[in-house]
Structure formats: C-alpha cells, structure tokens
Amino acid sequence: MLRLIAAAFLTASLGAFAADGDINVVIENHKFTPDRIEIPAGKKVKLVIDNKDATAEEFESHDLKIEKVIPAKSKGVVYVGPLKPGEYKFVGEFHEKTAKGVIVAK
Image (cartoon, rainbow, N blue to C red; front, side):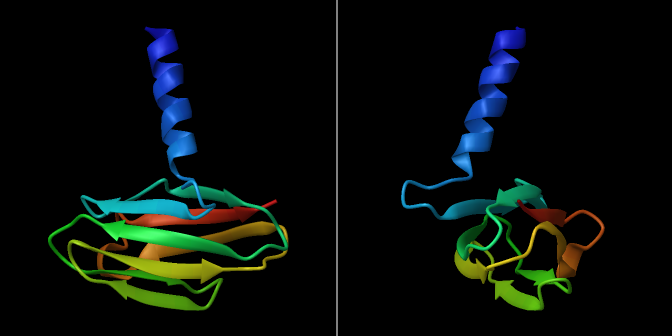
C-alpha cells in the first residue's frame, strides 16, 4: 500500500511538468493542483493553467504583480520570472478561501 501511495505522489509531482518544460496547473473544485510549484531561480517559466471548473477563476499574485482571468472550461498561460530565490504566493481571486498556492524559486 505504501508503494502505491509513493508511486501516486511521484506521478502527481512529475505530472506538473509537460514534455516541453511548461508547468501544468489545474483548477478544479476551486483549488489549484499542484498548490506548491517549484521553479528554478533566475529562469522564466510558462504556467499552463487548465480551469476545469464551470466558473471563471482569476490567477492572481500580488507578490508577482500578475492577474489573469481563466474562463470556465478553458486554459490560460501565465509567464513567471525570472525570480530571485524565495516564495511567492498566488490565489484564485474569485475563490480565495480555497484556491491558494505558492511558487518557490530555488
């Protein structure tokens, strides 16, 4: 059982990275998955955000000065960086109580 859990975790962790280096983020049930995104410091990265919910969501980060509305049942792109090492919070502005996350630049 422990092996299955470890395998599922590893698959979920690796699933955030697309073959071309993009980072996939899913909005579902007004939550971000993954809700912790690690990126290399000093590099620009592309987040591909797939909103599976029936309502729009706004990816917002005051730390990064980013706002991007992702319509219901669609995808949007957000470019992040290059960033200094640190943690940068983000939320889904339309559902801030549940849609929370952090980008960690290392």
